Length: 108
Image (cartoon, rainbow, N blue to C red; front, top):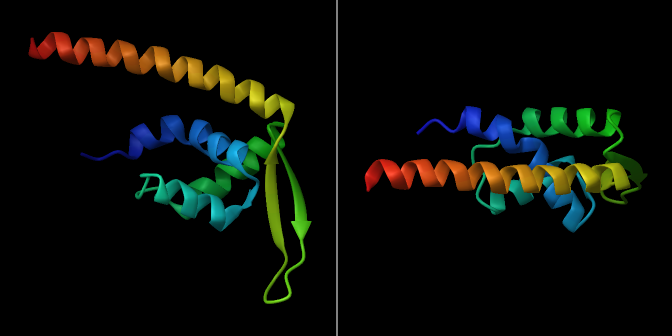
C-alpha cells in the first residue's frame, strides 16, 4: 500500500508528538519518526513541516553548539503547538474510530 497520502495527513501530528516528548534537531526528529514506525517518511517532508510549524508559532527553535560538527538547530513545542497537538489527537482519534467502524462493518 502506498502510504504517501496518509503520511501527509498525519505528519504535523506526528512531528508535534515527537517534539512534545523531547526537543530535537531535524535529523533526530526524522530518526525518531522512523524508529516509531514511519519508515517511509522523507527528510525533506519533515524539514518542510518543521519550518511550517515554526512559522505558525507551534514550534520554537534554538541553536546548540557542537564540538564535533556544525551547530544544530533544535525545535521545541510551544503552548500553541501543544494546543494544536491536543486538537489533532482528538481529531485523529475520532477519524480513526470512524474509519475502523466502516471497515469492520464492510467485513461483517
